[in-house]
Amino acid sequence: MKNYTVRPYEPRDFEAWNGFIGKAKNATFLFHRDFMEYHKDRFQDFSLIVEEDQKWVAVLPANRVGDDLFSHQGLTYGGLVYDGKLNADEVEVVFTNLVLFLKENKIQNLFYKPIISIYGKQSSLEMDYFLFRKNAVLYRKDLNLAIDFASDFRISKSKMKHFRRISESDIEMRKETSLASFWDKVLVPRLKEKHNTNPVHTKEEIQSLAEKFPENIIQYNAYLEDEIVAGITLFHFGNVVKSQYGATTTQGEKLRALDFLFINLITEFKDKVSYFDMGTVTENNEKGYNPGLLKQKEELGCSVYNQDFYSLAI
Image (tube, rainbow, N blue to C red; front, side):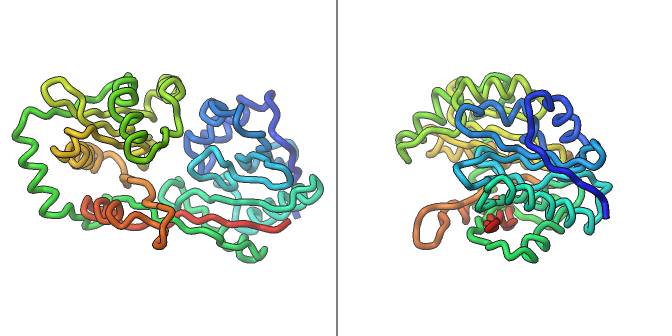
């Protein structure tokens, strides 16, 4: 049996971590330290590195809260990230060693949020099996909606009818490098008005991240007579694009400007990526999801790809 050792991430590992993320089979730019550390003041980082004879074979982006370990609360998804050369038997041994390390470090529970299957360069579903074998509990499952461009996806007739109508007006889509206008004039005021909340990223944070990851964070806005009426912030993962934020002004809502942007972007990316991810429809109600939002995304051609959440008693 191979000899794997586990140790916590340290600042001196910054470059080596990013190098490993760049070639791992189930990693995205969200696991890059430049992205993870924009909110390092909010989380106690307890990311882990698994080595074989000092060669990195896996990492776990994670944060610690008391006696619990989360993979990672500041990221949309996480889970064990590993070298594509590892076979399933080796992944099981890596995970077993990681669990032993957590036990030795007085961790009582691991909360594990695996990457959605569409994001990996290769499948990493073996981890679902090993979580099951270790009696992990699937305690939450979110509906995540995405378009598979290889499928026979369809945008509803009503969406296309309104799209053609609005396209005949003076509305236009613009790709922009600054996210300030969307944050200041659309996203922040609309979230405050409709949900009394704020976006996860401040304007300064998202702009800084966009400058660090210019190929990955892209802003598209809709304008009517030079007045912004809607915007969508895309995260580009190579094989997948995700609408991380989307919002309209009151005028934009009447115009269906968000649908205008979505349909244009679906056309823009359908030959460039495999999936267009529109995110979850989770809501704190009896159903656990927002039926109107689910219908809206399905009418844009989306299907369901579940986001799972596991807990494992250590």
